[in-house]
Image (cartoon, rainbow, N blue to C red; front, side):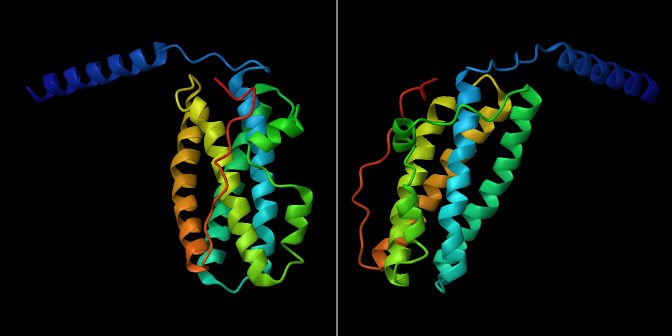
Length: 197
């Protein structure tokens, strides 16, 4: 009896495994697909987030602010490794990079804004970092939302992770601004042309 039950279970498992093997895999994205553009642009976006966070990790003594900057750095470094590996696996180069208009729609900071984080008096630099990073995160969320239902599982998971994680970090940074007597009054970034799925 036990042998028959075990044999039946084994047949069921093997049959299920066969079904999994026959499930169609999603086709690799094309070089001009929404997925490829999303990954290319998000790489640039994440690289800038590291550049925004670095001065705060170097200068700030505020434990809460440093914790946010460190979380952003560690999380986005890992996502950068994933996205670069995807591009390599798809056989794509990291270009084309976003145009200036797309970068603005992505909530990206200017070179002057980033450089000022190292030269402004620390209290001003901390407020500027929080404002810039909130807008930066809003841009990442706007970029990610159209890809939350992508047929590419990896891209879909990343898009959903970006939205969930960065919404939480925005709430934390807004509370840090309020603790400094500041408010974030900038309009949320909108997805730039070319970021619709």
